[in-house]
Structures are given as structure tokens and as C-alpha cells.
Length: 606
Image 1 (tube, helix red, strand yellow):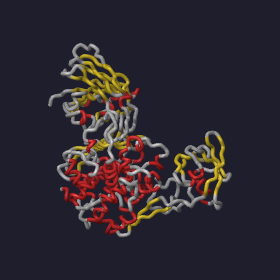
Image 2: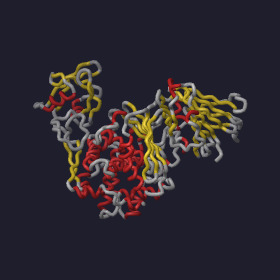
Image 3: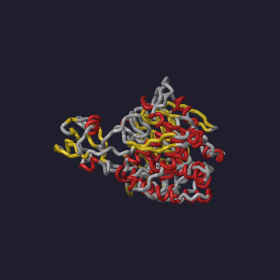
Image 4: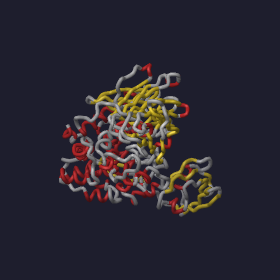
């Protein structure tokens, strides 16, 4: 393969959060070339304008270093006047966004997505892209740093040379391999011939062997579901550890994760799985599932998206929603968590929907289409006006699985539908039309799911869990919340008696209102976002005392003392019985639940 473009990336100044790139462009037939950075990164549907982090940029001829004219055309595009000569473009990028969607550098490592680092060169998009990563030899802070990525390597250098070489077939492939350059712990394990690498930033006392043991059956589930030949031989779980933070972004051969460093199991810890560790396993499950479902099975408009501007689709409920179903159910299917623990996780998702008045205003399809603004740029009113295509889509997938089993006398499930999506669309990356679910179910299963999808995806109906989950041996219930921290699921704690109808956080005196729920007591009373509630009926409060006093109220209203914009107000709050908006499930038939969680249908994918 001939190399057309050569990018050289170096950590030029980690103290200033900067890396530099030198782009060598060979001689060509055009007088001018267009250079650009993407506006967004695939898998994260928000315009991020990566070009804003370009600190400086210049160009010259390769032969004599004579400067070339570089005209900026818009926020992310430059026109390079080359007269067809071989040339070099040098630029510096500021990297201080710890979100796994952009680029970040500190004293310990650099994490860089290609969309933040590598200019696209017009006419060269489908040519080979060569990358050299290097470290300055005179910076002792970087002496132990190593380069890690899923990008294909060649001419592997010796470790003491601090230089690594990679090669991709096209620009689209080039920007789909995030880079980690720094200090990290790594651990490898194999599942059915596929080698997995766990990478965690820094040096830690984390029990990597335990994580590998727990992830192995999860990975095996996904591999078995879609069947051989597998689209991967190697896969990299790349985790950036931080004091706080959460996120994941899928790539074809890797995933980038952000997770709190103290929420993972350490060496010598007991066998119990904390909720935070279960969440981490679910996050890994979610992103690895995207190896098939998003990175290869994808909406038709996402096969070759225009990364310079938004690309709209109403199918994200299929892609993130179905994946949100499989990420958790796989943990139960593989025995990593119990059936009841899985149902508690589903209950937490359903509870978020029940508290969300926006689910009655926006459909899952509309949520998908408007992801660019309404979902990715949420404000405090979001819960009252929008619905999550992740959360609603996951519950829709659960209902669809049960519906397919019911309509087929247990011969067809969502697993079979996923396998069809893979064989019909994913293997060749053809791209799915908007009506793909209805079409496949009717054509291959002779099951009409149009009424169901029209109601719960294109309409705003709730999934009828009360009638569906008994078919898998469970019962759906609701209750009032037990506290402001209650997330849903089974609980033995006493429920609250009266609702505040708002979420609050601790303040130096009293509490600050961070969310007001539509139609509940606080909104009826005129409580506003950022109000500082300091007293109830003259009693100074904190969060727990506020609820205790509200629960003990016998009058029809209580008086809240509120500071708003520097003024003290007295507001009458109606005393209203707490709404039952917390979901929980109980298992009524152990055998049905066990049968539902089995992998009885996955053998069709072998």
C-alpha cells in the first residue's frame, strides 16, 4: 500500500495542554487543497467545533520551506494554495477536554481523538494515512510514556526510541482510533480467539484480573449473539480514570471510557459487587455491543455522514435504546448479576421515565432526531420537556422482546431480530431505513409490530410493562420515593408521605432547588430553579429535615421561607401526597424468569 499522507504527532508542551502535528502532503494535481477538522465525532451527536482548539497553523513547500498561503474559509476549513507542490502543514492543538470525545493532556497521559487532531485533506480522503507518534527526548516527565491504540501498527520502534508508527486505509478509518500516550496499566485476556486489552490510565491497585473474569462472559455473549466470523481479532477497552466523571464512546476496534478511579475493585477486596462496579461492567457491555450495533449496523444516513454539520436520524432509539437493553440484560444472562439485581436496574430506568413529564410530550423518535440540541444540550427544564432515547429506547426494546416471544409462541426474540440486522445490514454496512424494525419483523417473523411502535416510539405512550412482564415471570409495581436520593427498585426503607416536587442540593443554609417537576407541588406553589429554601413554617431546614417536616405536616399548606435573587420570600406550598413514581419489580415465577434470561436463541447465530 502506498502512503499518501504522513502525519507526525508530538506532545510538544504538556504543561500548556498542547500537542503539535506536522502534516506532509505529497505532490498532487490540484492548485489548491481544502483542509478541515470535523464539527462532531461519530457516536456523539453534538456539534463540538474541534477546530476551535487549533492554536496556530501554517504551511510551506516541502522542498525549500517557502511559506504557502493558507486562507481560512469558515470556522473549520482552510484553503491551501499549493500549486500542486509537495508541502507541509504545521499546527498546534490545545487539549484540555476530559470528556473522551475530544483531546486531553496532563502530567500523566495524553488522550487524543482523531477528530480533534487530524486535518482532512480534500482529494486524499480515501488514500492511505500514515501516522508517527513521538515524544520529546529531553522531557523527563514523559520518559515512561508509551503509545496505545487500536490503530494498525507498522515498523514497531524500540521502546527507548519513543516513536510509534501507524497506518490506516482512509481518513474515516484514521479518525476512528483514539490514541492514549502516557502511563497506564494494561491487562489482556482472550475470549473465543479474540484478544481483549484492558487499559487504565496511571498506575493503580485495581484488580484487573477480576475485571477480566467478569467481562469475559459478557464479551462471549455479544460474540455468540452475532456469530462468526467475528469482525474483530483484537479489542481495546481504554479507560481514563478521574476523581469524577462518566462516559463512553464506541469505536470499531476499541472504546474510550471515563470512570471514577475509586469506584472499581481493588486487589484484596471481597467478592461483592458494588453498584458502581456493576455500572462499569454495564458501560463496557454497552460500548462493546456497539462493535456491531452502531459501528457496523447503522442508520443509512450514518454510513458516510457529513462531519461538517449535523446529520439527522430518528433511529437512535434503535441504536442506543436496544444497546441500553442489552448492556444490562447481558450481565444477568452471563451470571454476573442476579435476576433481581437486573430488574432493579430496569426499575431505576423506568423510574426516571415516570418522573419525566417530557415523556408525554416528546416521542423516542423525536428525541432521536433532536439529539443535537434537546438531548445533548439539556438544561434544568429538560425533564419536563424531553425524553431520553437511551432510556425510553431500552424499555421499548424490553417490551419488543417480550412481544415477539408472545406472538411467536416463544420461537422468536429480540436476539433473532439483532441477528437479522447484522446479516441484512451490518456485515456489508448498508445502512438501515427508518422502518427497518417493522419491515424485518413482518417479512421474516410474520409479526406486525407497527401498532406497538406507533404507540411507544412514534407516539408518547408508556410501554405496558404491567401486562408484558408477567409473561417472563415478573410483576411491575410503583411506590413513592423513600428519599431525595432514591433511584427506584426494591427497597425496605419507608416511603415519604408528602411530595416536595423538586430536587434540591445542600446549601450553606438550607437547600438550593436544582430541578422543579411539572405539575407537582413546588411548581404549583411557584418555587423556581435556584431558589434557596431556608425554612419551613419558621423552622430552619436541611434536605432531610425539610422532608421530615413536610411529612409531619397536617395543614393543607406549609410556608416555605425562600431566598430568591437576594430577596426573602414566603411561599405557600400545598401539602400533597407523594406520587408513586418509583418503579420496582418482583419475581413471581422463578422458572419463567430463568428461561427468559437464558441464551436459548443465540445458537442460531453460530
